[in-house]
Structures are given as C-alpha cells and as structure tokens.
Amino acid sequence: MKKSYIFTPGPSPVPPEVGIAQVKMVHHRSPDFGEYLDRVLNGLKYVYQTENDVIMFTSSGTGAMEGAIANCFSAGDKVIAFAGGKFGERLVEISNCFGLNCIAIEYEWGENADPAALEKALEENPDTRGVFLTQSETSTGVVNDVEAFARIVARTDALFLVDAISGLGAVDLKTDEWGVDLVVGGSQKALMIPPGLAFVAVSKKAWKAVDTATLPRYYFCFKAAKASQSKTPPETPYTPAITLIQALDVAMSMIKDEGLENVFARHELFARATQAAVEALGLEFVATDRSRAFVTTSVWAPEGIKGGDIVKAMRNDFGMFIAGGQGKLKGKIFRLGHVGYFDRFDITSQLAGLELALKKLGYPVEIGAGVTAALKVLAGE
Ligand SMILES: Cc1ncc(COP(=O)(O)O)c(C=O)c1O
Image 1: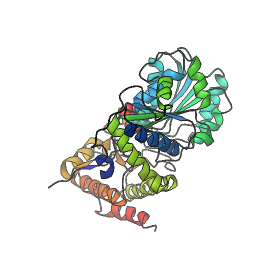
Image 2: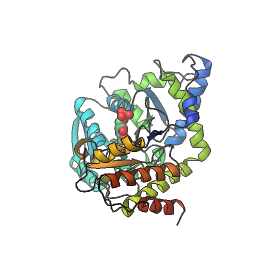
Image 3: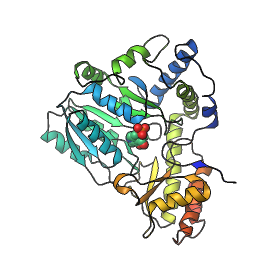
C-alpha cells in the first residue's frame, strides 16, 4: 500500500471538507450561488486586507496577471518589471506580448529584488506607468519585500502590480496599508482549493487607469466583472467554476476561524522547521534571504545528484509529490512545500521521505537528522 501526498507549492493539499463542498451542483444564477459568492468576495477582502474591489475570474493565476495588465495599460506604456525567476519573467513576457515598453530588471535567481534598483530605474524613467513585482517567486522560494517597493512606488504616479499568486494568505501583504494597486492571487496555493480561480484586488487609482487604458480585453474585462459582482446578490459575467467557489467558501471560513495572523505564523513556523532540517542535512538553500521565504523552501540538489532524481525517488518510492526546478533551475534544485493545508506531520513526513530518498541516491544522510531538527523547531526548542 502506498499513500499519495501532494507537497508541491501549488497545487497544494486540499482539506477534505473543502473537497466535499464541491459535490453539490448549484446553478450560477440561483440565489444559493449568490450567497456563496457574496461570502467568498467578502472573505477575499479579509485575506487581501483590503476594502478595494476584489475581482474574480475563472482561470488559473496567469489569466488574472494578464487581466491586470490588459485592463490598466495601453500599448507603449513604460513599465518596470522585476524578473528574478520564472514568474517574474512571466510579467515581462505578458508586458511584451501586449506591446508595453517594458524595462526588465533582471536579478539573480535566488536573490531578492532590490528596492534600490527600483529607485534608480524610476529616477531614470520618470514617465513609468507601472511597476511589476512578484511577491513570492515560487521558482526560487524568494519572497520579496513588497512593503519597501510600495513605499517607493507611492512617490510616483505609477501603478504598483504585485503577483501574489503563491504568497497571498501565506505571507503578510497589507494591500491597503501599503498601497498596492493591483494584487493578483490564485486559488491553488494558500487558499487551499484546487486550481481554477484567480483574483485581482483593484485600487481606486487602478480603476482610474482602467477608464483610460486601451489594451484589448474581453474575458478578463474588469468593468464587466465588477458590474456583475456589484449586483445583489453578486454574479459573474460568464459561467464561473461554481464548485470551486463553493470550495472557497469553506476554505475562507477555515482561514477566518484560524485568523490571518495565525495563518501567517503557521506558515513561518513550518518554513523555519523545514529550513532547520535542510541545514541539518548539510544542504544549500537557493534563496539567499530566508527571512520571509515561507511559501516553499528551494534547495540545491547535492553534487552529483539531479534535482529531478530526488523528486522521482520521493514520488516513486513514497508517493510524495514535491516540485523540481523550473526554467534555468530545472534539474538543479528541488522545492519542499509548506503553503496552504499543511500540518506539522506533513512537514516531518516530507522531510522523512527526503532523507530516505537522499540516502537511496547515495547522499550521506544521518537518518533522522533533518526530521529531528524540524521537530525541535516545531516543539519551540
Ligand atoms: C508566483 C506565481 N505567479 C504565477 C503563477 C502562475 O499561476 P497559474 O499556474 O495558476 O497560472 C504561479 C504558479 O505557480 C506562481 O507561483
């Protein structure tokens, strides 16, 4: 008998009660659905820490990234996008695809985006209309300092767009207090439901840009979405992923019951426990700054072992799905998950599987060293 575990940083594990919530089909023009959607939209405001509109789309996160750009900018607009991983690169790719004049600030994968680089770029480009940053760069495990960036963007007329697809609900992001204009989120990470829903929190400043922006948009039209969501009860313009919204209703109440601060603290604790294990096993981190890296722990595969072999060994031998590297880190790293519905024993199981896989692949492991280090953190030692 082999169990199956999903330890990837998205899609992440789904609580059984969230899964079960998808069984009963309701019609999306029925009052029942309106009630679900109303609660979910309010719940999203709680997670986003915002009074701004949160627009929902039936799509994966990338759809909402595209929507945020298509609704708020016009061809030729100058934007600055930070790219230090696969998802930062995606911001640049979407910008180029839509004909923006995108200044890509590339930084080393594993490093943090540097606020000083933004200050310099803005000085050199006072006509910048948008600044794009990835909060949690899932491909490297790095979590950027959104607040520091927000302070700098606030001195300009530019819109600040943050891809928070993997960090939303895991690492603090105070949308209103920090003044982030566009915050993109996705369903399959800390929000604990399957893939298929994406969200954007839209500030008043961003709504003004929507009025004048001329890039084409249809499915991802913010105004159409807002008009439907503003009805009583709220609706969506097109057929939504109804069952995912039912699932999100349950997941939101779990998050509210736990309390956002406690949810953040749990993510930090599990990340710290995982980091302690990685150190105890003598492995090297990809993320150079781990003070906020609470979504996924990216680790260099040891000399002579391919990252993919560790992923395969854990999957084939123990049914544990962890993530390998993406883009230029493919084959070189592996990523341990701790975002969303993880408990302490998911963390220790994952680490136990890692130890056994490493041993099988010939890496010298003192069996139990990583798990013990993690348990000590979990025990508050
Ligand atoms: C930070 C980040 N941005 C964007 C995406 C893309 O989201 P999706 O695959 O849901 O389109 C992901 C997915 O892993 C992500 O982690």
